[in-house]
Length: 473
Image (cartoon, rainbow, N blue to C red; front, side, top):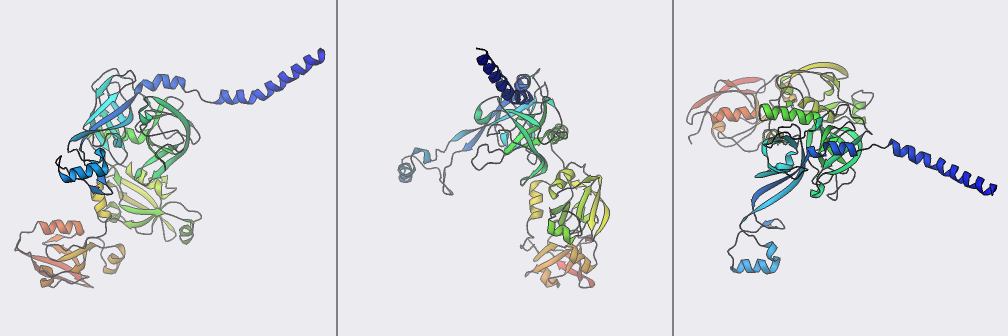
């Protein structure tokens, strides 16, 4: 009997010893229930309605509206079925997302892509109340939208900062994946400062929190219950969660909100350079002990970079005292800088460190930036010239510090009759200095047809004036 008692005691002791690690592990895991209970009511479901013309597409072809009873209408009905037919009526397209209140008087945040093109935005709270929301403003570059509902005493979240987040730290998301309201998912911070191809000005927070369609625009909380990010994107090959989620740092979102409230638009700093990664091979050629910084591959015309002493081949190592560890770290630093303020750059040039001051400009809108990024036009202007901006090498050869456009091609017309040749550089037109290709087009558009215009060109090392008569319309 005593022997059995001893065996039983030993079994209990072994069981308790094996249970200790699991108990310790369980006690170390975070508890999210209190956080969800406190801040769950601050999170809302957002649905939108958008009127659109219901035109079906098959393999890239648009099907036109057809009168019912026509032979082609009957053919399409038999071939594609009723769903394949264009109805010729406005239909309502609904999209689902998430958002959260940032003030008790009805301001809330969500993603720009959640409300894009919406005719009506409906906000539903956790107690099933519904509000029509007014769109205060959006910023596509950061994917942030600010909404407002007419209500008081709403439960706002507490805003924190993403600057203090650490990789490995626990975070919680609340949202409406696939329309399932107020779903909570948790994970850890996987990385910070991620740059995504379409979003160069946002240093994303990468997490392994389960985020799915419908979570977009919802808050990302830390264990203190403070919002540190706005859930925005996932990386997926299936359309569902695959372990890679990305959130916009709340610091970026707050800056956007302040600008939308005060000016109705968002301004960002702009340097006007194309940059690339410094690889190990490139670092060796530059005499660097390790790859770092952002390599300047191109200076955009009429940009702050061209007005400063930046050159193609410079490696930007620091921006306003902050180290540029990788090329993707530079755009967020520049974008957060106030427009028209000087910035101090530390660059590596020819094996030596050089300090450069650049007055930061305002980032152009996407259309203007895309136009600057496109290859130079091959279309001749009204006087028959195809012009382009000068690069740094051409300026050095011509002894020009700034301004001027190079003649790429001369087609039959007024410029040819005046004696302008390919390779000439136009420095002055109608008494005004020519700053670049875009400004030259604007100068030309302002000239009254039929006038003769004095045009200063440089040909090799000689300069001369030629008279160009603007053709009659």
